[in-house]
Amino acid sequence: MRVVFLGPPGSGKGTQAGLLAERLGVPAISTGDILRAAVREKTPLGREAQAVMDRGELVSDDLIVSLIRERIARPDARKGFILDGFPRTIAQAEALDKMLSGNGDALSAVVNFSVPEHVLVDRMLGRASAEGRSDDRPDAIAERLRVYREKTEPLVDFYRQRDLLADVNGVGSVEEVGGRIDGALMSVRGAGEGS
Ligand code: AP5
Ligand code: MG
Image 1: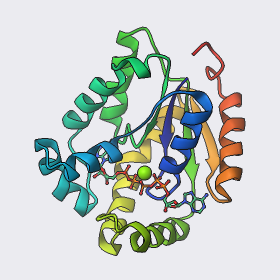
Image 2: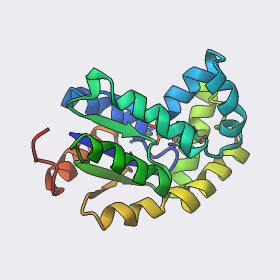
Image 3: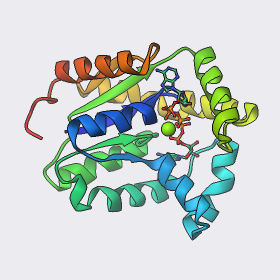
């Protein structure tokens, strides 16, 4: 299965992507995690991305698209993947479509997490004290939410029109949300079509 996880910051994409990846036996690919690793290792990519991420803005489409193109071409992603945090703009979604159709592949489903904004903020502030992620500061959180609404939310309609969208209520225990994801994936057209 080739699944995209779409949702605002703090909606549980990363938590659930790791768990679903284990259930399906495919890799969870998080552009945020790849970028944070590059920042830690001070690679050229990391140096370019750090300030943008710390402000809560988006790294350039070209950079992210080439990163994903390289990652999904690896052997472990041949039978499927879960994309956490990509695509995030219409341009990224169109690039992904092209990449996949060039290989004769297509997305199976897009899981759209809904969580009220005050819950998102509480979760990110909770993580700030536990993990100290550098973009979990009130100003960067506000900017990430604004950027989500402006640049990423239009993808909900983009994928709904393609009959790929699976809406999932992201409030509840991690196990409850995981169960809803499994149910939603079964009901989406295309989800059961091969791997
Ligand atoms: P990214 O790392 O993708 O961050 P994000 O979208 O802001 O989302 P988060 O990782 O904060 O939240 P999540 O939905 O994964 O939730 P999580 O499971 O962690 O991106 C970071 C930055 O990288 C971007 O701002 C941008 O600069 C750049 N970037 C990345 N991708 C890009 C792209 N495609 N294009 C351009 N730029 C890009 O959960 C959040 C918290 O809640 C955790 O503490 C968790 O333990 C807790 N939690 C999870 N589930 C539950 C639950 N059910 N109940 C209670 N708590 C829960
Ligand atoms: Mg995440």
